[in-house]
Image (cartoon, rainbow, N blue to C red; front, top):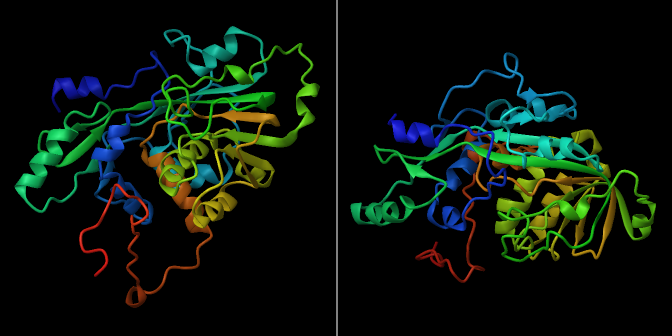
Length: 346
């Protein structure tokens, strides 16, 4: 690999830990579908691969520091074995002061658990193009996406390592920040999203905060357009997947998630029931004994995509026999910006 690309793929502990991916990545990179195809198979697929081999979980401890939450069945899942981030829980020499463990150790507040997450690099197989003109047009746009580069052989989209953060606050209140359902740098997964509204001094009496709705564990996932299936899958589910690294899965029934307005599609509510015990939409305030802030998460990564898929597949009936398979077409008919040529006839 060329020296330039090697530099771009090198993990970095310092720097801004918020690594939300540019929107153009989604609009230009249809190859994210390849990850969904991979998720539905129990065997490795050729369409998505790590850039560098990694040790198995039995030979390599991904946790740096002490005090990470139990991972239950997550540690035995395919997504965790192949794609889980390195979890750093202690502030070490050379780390940026904005890294989650360094924030926790700098002041005595109600921030009780902090993880800096280092996601491994990966690559996706490029789409199969029907002609050279279409390929050239796609590449002319894809080559300018900040978070992705096309390999020299023009067969792969290569993603560098990403960083994320999990923060757990004790006795904290969500009161509308980060704001839900708006496209803003201050929104969940935006570059400037803040956790400061959840912070209070340990000496402060937090009992008065519990006047409204109250839950044991709350995941904040107030991302843009959370009511739509598309952005529920590529944002809300991503935040929830990352949050699972600090939430034991045995506590699912005691976990709530807060997002924006009620989903437009019934299937979103069905998936919520797989994820958590309660989903809250546009509440004025919610008090939580443990509030999980995971809004600093990568928009595209195999770990987060596979994790939600694994949870859904666990509740599905056994797969049909090879002679009884169905092909399902998911229409974009309700999205005015997208149309499939000849969809009506199909």
